[in-house]
Image (cartoon, rainbow, N blue to C red; front, side, top):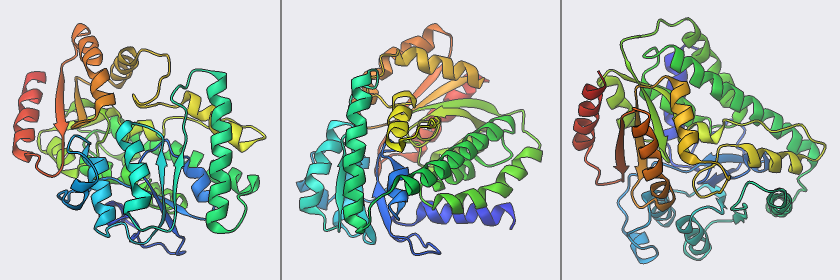
Length: 370
């Protein structure tokens, strides 16, 4: 199979509505919004975890349920549920994260008809032993809930198999990011985005098979050294139009710190006899969003990542009304300024976002970097 054919399958997985993704084994699909949700547990229970993002629909039905100052991921997701675009999902899992996501988790069972709903009670702090112990209990509750969904107990044997499979998926995603940075321009930025997003739509074993020729292609591809390397920060980098602009403007993604990017896979699960303890330990050391407290300086963390990437500038992609990310942004922007690293803030929202306005601002920023 050629690389373009594989990329077409990634595109199809990302552009299809969740619940309508065609799977060879007809495995039931369970949706989720936040990458902090324990995907291995959903998979071990016999389901395919399907991440929910990129709803471009106007919000009409959800207006009566949510205020206008919630981000479009929450409002657009609820609109999709109310409009039937999530039909086919066997259930939906929420993570205990921001206020808007917690509120829509309470609204969802009353507003949207779906076989199952669950909330994983993730700790707010990730810097103490008590938080780890709390998470082990929360994961045990979720394990039992998944068992009730499927009618079969979720065993440690099956969970360990899923842990190993997702560990392999994360290793391949890190390899994809590494090769994309070493060979800028070899893979169009839009196709790079679709390949990485598809990892959280397709079954992990299917994605692992499809990504092999892409990695082989990148390993021997000639880099375009004339491209301007950018670091992407914020929450959601899931808009192919923006990544297409990067190609058209002769830019490349050097690395990112996004909920749709490295934050979803840049960690390891330690080897423990109890898989729940292993997952709790991994949570304590994985990259976390501003909804969680790690005790570390977010500005210094970002600055270190940008420096290691070799990027010439930083583009923040932050959903409008995302308070947790905007709370951290001033300190991060000040740290970048003091380090002599230019940055551009793009407040994203769909629908209604002016693509041409974003294009003009991006092109002006890149001209400043040249």
